[in-house]
Amino acid sequence: MASAGTLCTTVLHARDVAAAARFYRDLFGWRLDGERFLLRGQCAAAISGHRAEVDRWVPYFVAAGLPTGTLSTHRDLEGAVFGTCASDDPRAATLTSGPGSIWWVEALTHKTADAKAFYRDFFRWTFVERTPLEPHPLYIVCMRGMGQAAGILPIGPGWESAARWQVLFEVDDLEASTSTVISNGGTLDFGPLEVPSSAVITSFYDPGGALFFLAQPYERAA
Image (cartoon, rainbow, N blue to C red; front, top):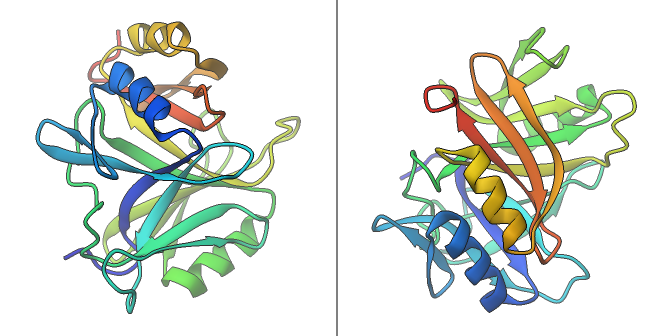
């Protein structure tokens, strides 16, 4: 079982589950099975119906003491939404690599020191600062033991971005995937952005308004 503070899954909170499932089926090949998105026989992510004004991707991390099947959502000091679940949650992502899998999750923050203190207390994370991690002057990797749990990215000047958690999914052809997003009603947010020694990344909004990112690792980047 996964230990507390490690990523369990990502959940799309969607107003129209059927429409969202069609969009991500066409993009990733995911098949909806109850609340789970399946690919290659594994759980890639999950979905849950809700009534908010806009859809949202939320990362969920393992927390001790939660009953199996319980999803709890939280906000950090700046309002960024994340969640917790039991280590044996049936929606836990078991697809851990390859196209259509969760590639990374990270929190954007205006207040780096406050974010580190909050997540240190909440998850007992420790932190490794990378200065610089081009194109950013600072990137913080959240560690749970010896494993990487997530990232923290300070919001730069002129970004006009609120604090938030964001989810990145792996693709093997970013250009083709971008065309699929657009042709199926999604919209481009930002990118492509080259992260040296890592990936080419582009962010989008799906037809329900949920922000998500696609990442093509350099071993498959053109």
